Image (cartoon, rainbow, N blue to C red):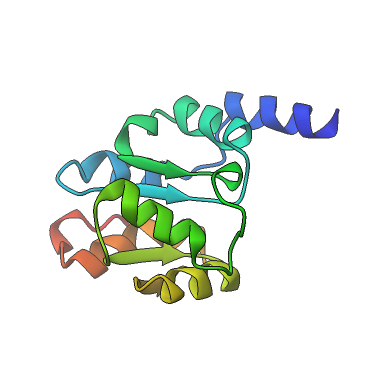
Length: 132
């Protein structure tokens, strides 16, 4: 019951910063993916409610892999789905950092999710879109 209440709350009021939403909507020329150990039923409604589900070319949820982060499996799968072998990964967890590195991606740690948009723009060298 608690999980269902949290799912409904997150879908009605997405816990995603406005700066992050604006940043994702501005990255139309990039292949974007989501890698999470959470279930599709927990995450997809939040992305949809925030209006950013369409920003992602591929999604990997917990049920898509047998071995979760820190195993490389989730990032290997997103690489296959996106048709890439490497690229930048923005990760906020130690397990995710290990997983992405093991899969051959370049990891950019995100200690504070509120800073994600500026970290992404910095990594992409796009100072015109830095959000303050």
